Image 1 (cartoon, rainbow, N blue to C red):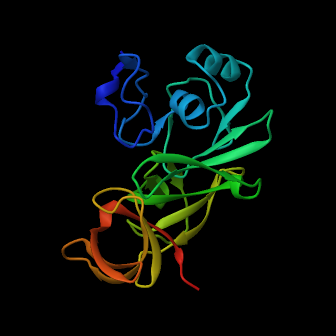
Image 2: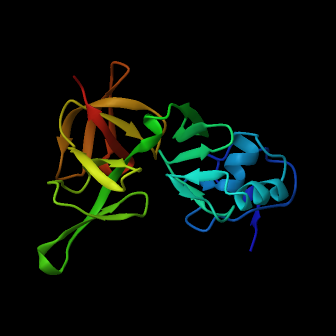
Length: 218
């Protein structure tokens, strides 16, 4: 089933006028955008769906170090797209005007991405499973809490470190009124699940569920 152009998220940087239907991503349309939209409308390295299918068939496109096999696959926040023939990599980000954009990154940066912990589960053998915001799950012995972030080594397919949600941590807001903005945590209100932030010298409040911890200042 296709998606009506008028129904696509406002974060997709596409023209509101054009063909009536667009590709419907396999996962939640509010989380990122499908490979087709990224390659054709954002990076503009192909002109149409036929060309996207061809470069995928030629095994030219990686998503988080895995070969892409479907133009409907979602590219989510901080995911890495690699164009093998061009030897270029890009990371999906959200601009201050709340539009999806692709930022070119170097080879070292392309080996890593950050994700938010949205759940934890104890498995048999007392193994800990971390459920992440990008839909993946990892078995890890790293000590982390829900709402902390983790740095993932895409090349080795493992979590390298945890970045805790705490005061003075740098954060990125991916949803709500301040989506696309970065700031620093002043205070955390665990009872109401909110934080007070410093964004460009101004005090702002946001829900914890709307932000992701990037790193600790200093």
